[in-house]
Image 1: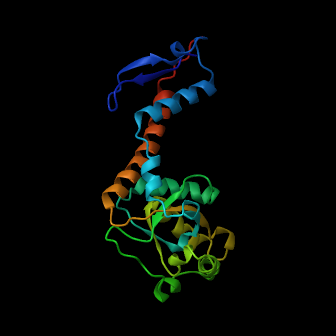
Image 2 (image 1 turned 60 degrees about the horizontal axis):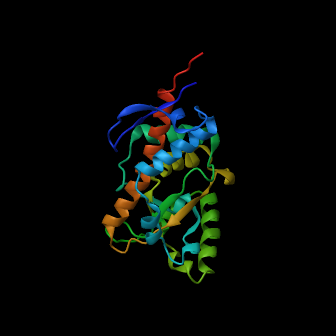
Length: 229
């Protein structure tokens, strides 16, 4: 089996190159191919870590926590809602539910206008009794933490992960209103906007580009695989 990928400058597919030419043994194992792909992606996409790290709520170890889905407010300023993406995510969620580790949510207490949103009685009235229970437990955790208590009674705006919220909440509310196990708290990283909207948008566009480029590289490799007997 000969494996090829297209090599060139970013945005230029260039000419096909035999991955096997890059090793002493000639051809790559499946494990080596994945390693090569990861190297390609890392070399072709910007390093987002430092930018994201600077935006994280401090102290850093307090910035990542499980937040009830009902406390998340969609804010599609990084990417507009794409109906096909929402439908695909909904289909997967119906079959598998929430799978921790399949992508973090990037959230902030502020929206792109620097405004926060309170958990109002009107919002609570739209929740099932299970959402009320999950939220009360979350609120108690915040209240007892001298650092996180600044988020008591606040909704979290979703800067990245809106498609998942849009896809998942109707399924939970319509199909599983009486099933506590489906009222998820999701892995989230809290960012601090501090009025710096350009940096927020740039960092999260890079996160989305990294995910897209990695998928594109995998697809390109699959398409360009040729088998020889």
